[in-house]
Image (cartoon, rainbow, N blue to C red; front, side, top):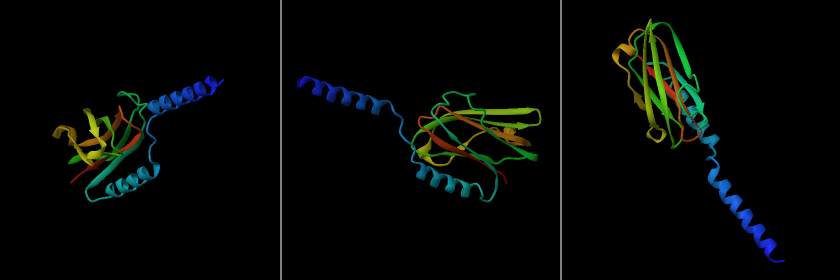
Length: 154
């Protein structure tokens, strides 16, 4: 009769251990809110033309799953650069696109580290001149997170 309680304890322990291995880390919502507030302040800085931001889930594994976020300018604009940042200690990839009339420029960047802080995203001069629209789509996140791209001008 002692075997049944022992089996129950062992099987419960196995299920608990396996469940712990398969679950994703829970996002610290308070920390992410604090990060978002800091990013919002950075997006209001001098020389900022606009900012794109969104949450991302590990369920966005490849490009094209999420159409991303875009901003359209009222008139053609020259862009100095783009700064990417994301929340947490994970990684993600992303695709930056610009449209300038009939010219479209795309740059896909893999394994952007969220722990590195703001990182420049590079586009050719042609992809930053006379821009009508900017878009960014994140994918392949190693953990649930959020991202932001700040668009800088002169």
